[in-house]
Each structure stands twice: as C-alpha cells, then as structure tokens.
Length: 361
Image (tube, rainbow, N blue to C red; front, side, top):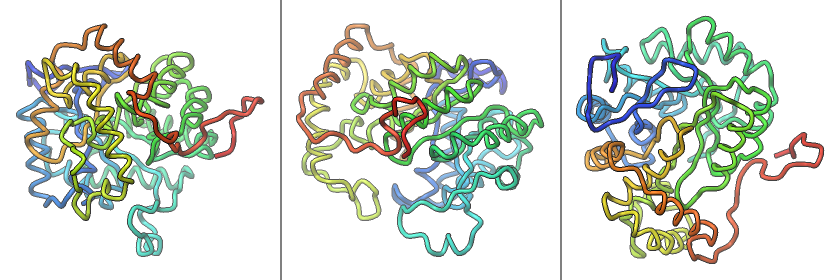
C-alpha cells in the first residue's frame, strides 16, 4: 500500500528504507535506459510518457537518475513527468562526475568516465544543480556515483552528505558502485567506516551473485540500516530469457561490445534455471530472487519498452520463490551453473591486505 499519494496498487508491494519514512515500490525505474541512448533512442516525450505509465498504471514510485545521465536529461525528464506531483514519487539521483567541465565533456569518447569531483563545495554545487533540474527542493536519495576507494576514505565527503540531510536537501544518502561488476572492498570499507549509511546501489543477480552477496553480509555486520537498491538485475538482459546463440545486438547497444563467450555461456547458465519459470516469467523470477533478501529495498530492472514495464512491475506481487527453489539456485551457483569459463574479471578492490587497511585499487 502506498499511503502518501492516496494511490493503491494491489499488485505492487512497497518497502521502507530502514530508519526513515521513505517507502518505495519493490520494482523501481532506472532512467539511464531512457536518457542516455545506450539502449536505443527515446525522445523526451516518449520517456516522460513511460515514466508516468510506470507510476499511474503500475504503482512504481522509485525513480533512479544521475546528473551524468544525458548531462541532466534524466532529471529533467522526471521533473516533467511528475510536475505538480512531487509527493507521489521517490527520486534518487547521483553526483560525483564533473559534468560541468566543458573541456572534459568535449573530449569524452564513448563510455569513458568523466573526471570525478567530490570536494564539499562541488558536491553542494552539484546537488543544487540537481534540485534545479528536478524542480524540487529535496532529493529523497542521493548517491555518490561510481565511488572509488579514495572517495570511500574521504570522511569529508560523507560528512557533507550528512550536512545536506540535516539541512533537508536530501532525505537519505549512500553510494552507487560501478560501472562494472566488482568493488567489493570499496563497499565493505564504506560500511565499516560510515555505519549510518542508508543505501548502496550495486550489481547483483541470480547468475552474478559475487560480490553482491558479500556486500550484503558486510552490511548485516556493520551498518544496521543500510539497504540496497539493485541494478543489472537481469545480467544485462540475460535473465530476461530472450537471448539465443544467434542474438545480434544493434550497433548502438552497449552489449554489442561484449565477447561472444558472454552470450554463449550466459545462455547455458539460463537453461539450468527453467524451474524458476513455472509460475512466472524468468524475468519476473529474477526479481523475486533479489526480493527474497530483506535488505533489498528496491530493484532497478532495465526497462526500455512497455512490454517490459508491464512484465517487471507485475513481478512484485508474484508468489515468493519457494525455499526449495532458492536452495536449488544456491547449489547451481556453487558450480557456476554447470559452465566452465575463465574467472570473472572484477573491477576495484577484490582482495584485502592482512592489515585490514584494504588493498589499493
């Protein structure tokens, strides 16, 4: 039940960020699919219409943006979609990239990362710019975008987020780790150093369980109120169950740049999971697997058309996966779903020095 806006969607369930009054739909909407052009082009009108449908027809209330998505485009789309209805939605955005440096923007090629800036003055400037684009005076959830170890260890950065919370500009704060899978000790050390953190955004899914599972264990040990919002819920589309060995991705789709082995091995793994798709689609079961973890507050499947919006939103109210199904997934994961492949190439800090200080990335 979603009380704030007087809407009731019988088929969407809601969870609360622990220690706050922020209630969000179990299935959220990550706006990078509609604002960046990496998933096919969408006009702003199409994007806005889709955001409104997500909320009005399916009860989705959590919308995740970043200032770097289309240089503010995702935030402007959200502002337009929910003009005059700010109370109806929970807005998350991210800061940390210097999207205001013209020289860096001009030199950017493909998916190369922009330079990052996280000094207090810049964070405050970036947050004010987000508020302007979102046409609001508060951000529900602010995350440091793709935080690295140097940011994790920067006390001043997290203190700035606490100050912004006290000032009422943000309601909850945390970090998003990425862009690729990994970043284990960045997350672990952040949970140890800043145990009052509200949330972490990470990559986690049925066939890519490491290091997400270890991050959740670290939160249980160190950060009582830290919950997780999950991206790459379907292993870049693999768990949607639609790929075959002959799948070819369009030229502007970022999956086109992956090695063919990713596709072939992924499809082999997916075939072992047929048992999950008896009462629902595999895509829905992938979300139910994530939602079986109480610390997952919301999931961010990649939504790029109406069919997926309807399918993923409907997952929330599907029956929970049985303990037998969960157990079977765990057993399959231990054997890498029966696939022999090169060890995964993780990013960031994946081993820890004996001193406990954390290895340098």
